[in-house]
Each structure stands twice: as C-alpha cells, then as structure tokens.
Length: 490
Image (cartoon, rainbow, N blue to C red; front, side, top):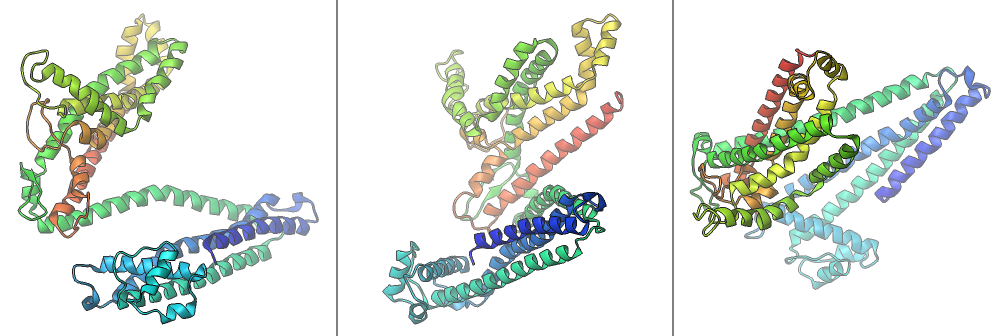
C-alpha cells in the first residue's frame, strides 16, 4: 500500500472517530450536553487522538528504523571478497539500492514480470535495458552479488512495508474502538485530551533540546576521533595551517581563530555604534512618521542573503579599498595588494549586523518603563541626560545581549568571509591583508569526496567544536552580565 494512502486512511479514521465519539457522548446524555462531564468536542477529540496519534507515531518510527535495519542486514551479507577492486561497501550498497528501486519500478509499471526478475542473471544486457526503461541508470556492470543483494533488499522492504501497513492499521482501528467504547456521559474526556496536549507541548519543547544534544554529540565523537589521529597540542598551539590529504599536514588552529576574531572585531566596530545610535534615535528622538518609515527600511538589511553581501564585498567594497590603499591609490602607498582582506569582510559583515543590533536594542530601549523617564524629567533632567543616565543603564543588560548575539552571528558567518576575506591562514595585524576564518576552512575541508578516516577531514569537526565552545562562552558571558545588572532595576 502506498504510504500516502496509509496516512490518508489513518486521518479518515481520526475524522470518523471525532464524529462518532461526539455523537455517542451526546446519545449517552440524552442529547443534552449539560449532562456530560466534558464538552462534546472533547469526546470527539479523544477518539480522534486514539485513532491517529499512536498509529502515526509508530509509522514515523518504522520509517526511520526500517531502512537502517535493512541496510545493516543486507550489507552484513555481502562478503568482503565480493567487493570489486577500488570500490567500497558503501558504493556497493548504493548500487544495491538503485537496482532494488529499479526492479520495484519495473515490476510495478509492467516493464518486467516477477518471473522475468527471477530469471535475470548478472551480466545480461536485459537487466540494464529494463532498468533504463524506468529511468534507473547504473554506472557499472551489475555483479551477481549486487543483483542478489538487490533482490533481497527489495524482498525485505516489501515484507517490512506489509508489516508496517498491518500494524499501523491495527493500531488505528484498535485505538478507535478502545476510545469509542470508553465514551459515555461520565467519561472525563477533557482530562484525557488536555493531558495529550500537554504531552505534545513537552515533546515540542524537547525537540530543540534533543537537537542540540545530537549536534553536540556528533561534534564530540568526531572531535575525539580526530585527536586520536592528530596531537591536540599541535592543533591548539600550532601557528601553521597547511592541510594535505596526502599526509604531512600542519593543522594549527591559531591562524584561523585569529582571522575569525579579527574580522568579527571589525564587524562589531562597525555595527555596534551605528546600530546602537540608530536604535536610540528611533526610540527616543524620531517622530512616529519617521520611525514607521526608517525602522522597516533598516530591517530590510537583515533579509538580504549573505551571498549577496559576499558579492558586494568582492565586487564593490574590495575594489574601493584597493583604490584607496593599493598601488597608485589615494594615499600613494601599496598597503593592499588585492580586493580580499580582513577589512573588506569586516566592513560588509558590520553592515549586515546593523539590523541585529538596532532592532534588538530598539525593542529593549522601548521596554524601559516610561515612569523612569518621567521621574528623570520631573527632577529637571534634559532629554539627552535622561537617555544617558536613566534609559541606557536600565537597558544595558538587553543591549549587551544584542551585541553578543551579533558577535555570535559574526563568528559563524561563512559566505562573506569566503568571498571577501580570502583563503590565506596567517597571523598578522594588518587589516588590509587577506585572511580566513574557521567557518571557511570547515567548508573547504568537507568539500568533495572527504575520507572521514583521515585527520584532514575530521579536523572540520574539531573546528566546529571550537566555534561551539566560543559561542557558548559568549552566551554564558551575556547571561552573567544580564543577571548582574538586572538586579539594580528589578
């Protein structure tokens, strides 16, 4: 049975359960809802929940677990001696899945019969022609082990799908019958439905936590594997970044961290003053008409894709800096040899971060109680004195949080750095030289056919873990500052 049909059947059962449960409850109360423990809608919702939720949950788990189980089972039956020279088990399994999909399509579309499938012999041109008719292309000859594994894979998939359909339908019908039999005027349907809603809310809240845990664990395991292959001291203290997949790599992270922090510092030096002053003007000095026009216009910057910012840095800002600081430029000295530099990426990234600082700071400043401003005015303070001595100290924790959020965004930026900062990993104080960052090197190390058994590929996870620790420290610092200063204004 197609998966879509199965889902539709379960949903139809749920809709029917809602109607049937509601009608049964009303019948048990003699048609008077005042005699029911709960509102009629709760009785219908209770039957619908029992008919759909358990079945759909089992379906989701089955769809995740079945492919993993079949892949592991079929791969375990392929002898290592039957893997072609120069290939791997993963590539063989890719062919197995393609052939299995092609056999299934060929039979379902009438291109091939089950008897013809059983008579197929590896190496015959017939199988390639049959699979080509249904749009399945094979990159190499179909070996006997590939064909046998593909047929086994297809058989296991068909059996698993049949068991899945039976189990899901039994759960849906069983849940429908159980909830319907419990429905009567004294049944506490509201309690059951609200408990189910509470569980769904808990599950939704847990998804973000579980996702974070999964990301951290994936980084930790691969980082530990990297440090088994490469000395940790050389990684953290090394000043040379020179990866080579042929061996003899120097994977010192210090040049990458320096480039990341240097570019982020320049970006914040641009974004924080402009964004903060813009927020103060819009919240304290601008008229309603100006604010209604300027604030959305400023926030448009946040919607521009970062690749556009990268092109702007490469094609506009970089050449402008070269015309000013390059050979024959405005100052007559050759301080900048190319358009890619720390300043190029930092200036454009600062422009991108302006709405992060201004919007958050504007909301935080507006959240300061008006009574604090009125009290300052009542004591004879001017507008500027009130902003400087009352409003800004009260909004300081939130403003610090906005700045640190912008810093985290700057540290994790990739496209602007790739196009605007260059690819050179170096330790230099010159902001007009090309440098690179951690994120750019994560992309370069995982681009192409990466062998995850080599330190040159696994180093990307160590770099990612380093970024994660940096942003975590920023968040902890922001939390500390917010708690420290918030006590003065609570």
